Length: 503
Ligand code: ATP
Image 1 (cartoon, rainbow, N blue to C red):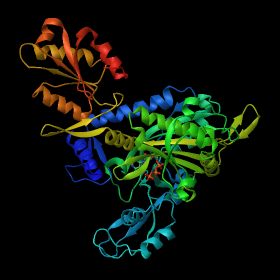
Image 2: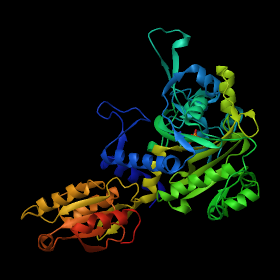
Image 3: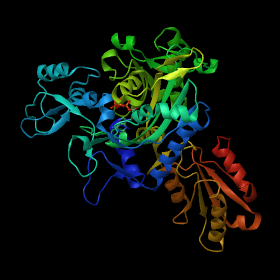
Image 4: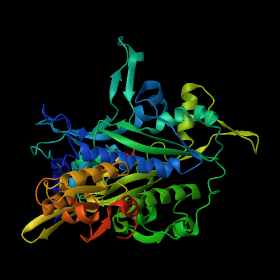
């Protein structure tokens, strides 16, 4: 299947089965905004819960917060977002269509301009005589376009009423660092995590929810003593974990990614510090745990010119999307940039008092940052399969049980003779323990197909034998194998299967 065709099919499935779709369809949509339907909401919640469990609940050194979405310009001034958080915008002289200049170059010249300055971008456009993708008209000179959504708070319209929707959740963690540290009594190293909405007025939202204007981030800021960035325990197994990696040096010498280990990336000083390596490993493990295939993931180091204004070292965890390798998640060393900036901006002391050295320090921050919608789309793309069953094309989502919106579907063979009643009884019992769906419409084959499409790992059929011997048929999605199990054992059996047990 061609890569573009695959993406088209994924989007078609997500819309058709009501996972998610462009927002406001009955009025005409606005690009970059999406609404989630039933299965999409369930899937999103599962990914979110999975992340929170992995990065917060199971770690004694991480606490959570939930910050506000609208905030004053003072915060974004200090963080550097008002001055720096922009993309290159280019406009057509003829039809006035607007494009992201770096995407235009990447589309037309098939080269990456990641990290190139505005001057260099303009030079490339002029030298290669690039024209409007819409009407072939001549283009203006590209300029910087700030991605933040501006709003006004209160009734007065003066400067002080200007506020912004947050373009990243991270700043709410930085501005609350001292308060959270004191109230939770955490000592360095420790993390503060948050899941919440972020807003970016992207010039050209594209690839469905990969790049949208309203999305959710799952971020953790991990605060480390500036002299203890290598005081971190990484297990031998994790150091020996294999990963496809593309370092800054390899990109300079135009090499492709290579399979390596974290031990070798640390020993070769490609990854600067142990705590940074640790969180890259955790991000990688988390995605593997969601069922994403190893061969579709790689880590790529940002080259110097590409680093965000706050970062001294960043590694992107990239996925091999139908449109090429792109960022799925980013793990940055933000240094003490943000805390320092907020100390200057607020004139408040955000230092940490180190009991051991009896000195005040500004912690260094390692930030693993994830986009919820991007993770969701990636999970779906990775799990998607279309295959021929006789003459008919069938879609199967090979979703990991930990994220499947529906874990078990329950079907009566027939509606009559008390079968539906028995099936509803079993449905009522199971739904207390797992995400279930009841379906009595159409042939059993059609019902299996409907569940395969939304990634349900197990289906149960209630038939005439059930009424005699209290057994039901369980069918596994990926192998399509079936066997009979006792009703009074099914909660335990299915519970084990959902945790990864063998069928
Ligand atoms: P990109 O290079 O793709 O624009 P970014 O480097 O600006 O991403 P970050 O600022 O590092 O992204 O944001 C952290 C994470 O938030 C990203 O890894 C991605 O998963 C998600 N994200 C960022 N921008 C968007 C967007 N417009 N739509 C959906 N998710 C996004």
